[in-house]
Image 1 (cartoon, rainbow, N blue to C red):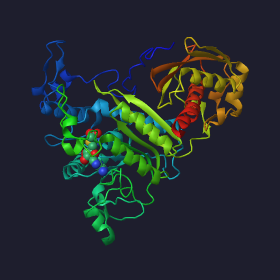
Image 2: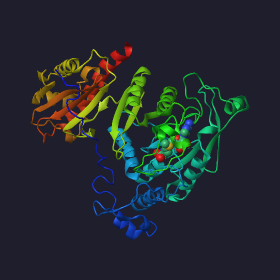
Image 3: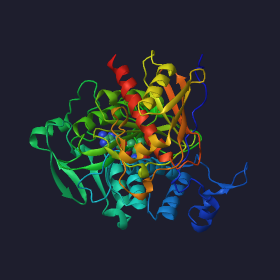
Image 4: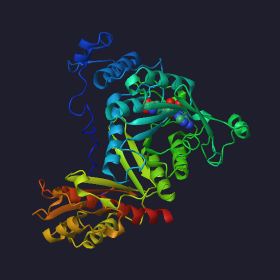
Length: 486
Ligand SMILES: C[S@@+](CC[C@H](N)C(=O)[O-])C[C@H]1O[C@@H](n2cnc3c(N)ncnc32)[C@H](O)[C@@H]1O
């Protein structure tokens, strides 16, 4: 019998391209370089290393200021009490989006010139995501918000960085409309685009009538995104909580955060549901829609909501956020690339994904059977072990060569195929491809599927990654749509 929690999933790691992944910030060095930071730094009584008082808002704000200046060349400030971002944590979300875009799962926009354009929903006074994305990667952004203080300080933060100001536009979401069928006219002033309400909708703006069960007001994307605008992605660190009491205060840190920033009616579940509903109307305007999610139960709810509205792909990840768990949720309505080039697939020896929201009748046994038939259908030899819930998969040289060369293995009708672009890095390797797929029941309705290459140094890890991704898509299509059809 499979135990309910066989093994813990591997803890998430800081993103490998995060500037601080190998070397955390050196407080001693920063204190010596920045006199304004010096008063906040002292030696930890436990480790003896320089540290700060994480419960002191002034200290965390000054740390963010010097990190942004020292490591990103960004001038930054926020007024007392506003949400103070932790730079290493916020960078992980940016790098995850970078991975989504570079995976080319969803093809690039035709009108992009190779330039990436993002939309940061609720950019806050700190405007952290546009500042990081623009300074690190040269991305351009629209950052939206609804409070006067956020709009004023986000603009100030952009203006303090003339080298980035061309790339970032701050937009007032209150000036947009709630309903998708009313098209706003727009006007640009002071570098800020505001949408001018027509007389007919003025009444609705002043006295909005929320639709039942819908977090309608203020608008989030529909009405804020202008006609004809296209973006590579949207991102959002939503107001997570339903009340300021629920938001509470983490006694170990002081990152500030006002009720306007942390709280909205219905909490993050309602806020992200609103983004999902808007995404249905704007499905062709974004390659990827993404949001941060603060609660596992909400992630599960939102993933099932996404399958119901007919997205073409859903991706999730877990972020390292100190002691707090946070997840990333991404989806798209666009058809994933038909030609998925092996050379572009990140090569990894261990991969995993979660199947969440499964009906109770679909357990590890059924999933393992499906894994087996998925790989058998592409001519792999499979040896299943139903006591340890794993299947060993072996693809012969010949079979792997066919997959690499002709690209005809559009497995299980999956949207991605392994098509050679004729480049020299796709020669047929001499090794067989062998890997193991294991299924672990986490809690009822949630399974972890893990894949591991059996030969660590194999040149075929790109093929393995692509096949594993196709397996994920096929299982989600098969089991999650069945679950939601009931
Ligand atoms: C948790 S804060 C995130 C701030 C910043 N992005 C960060 O990561 O630190 C959420 C932000 O969403 C803003 N907000 C709330 N409703 C909004 C809406 N309908 N459209 C745009 N922003 C909104 C709040 O004012 C707040 O600044």
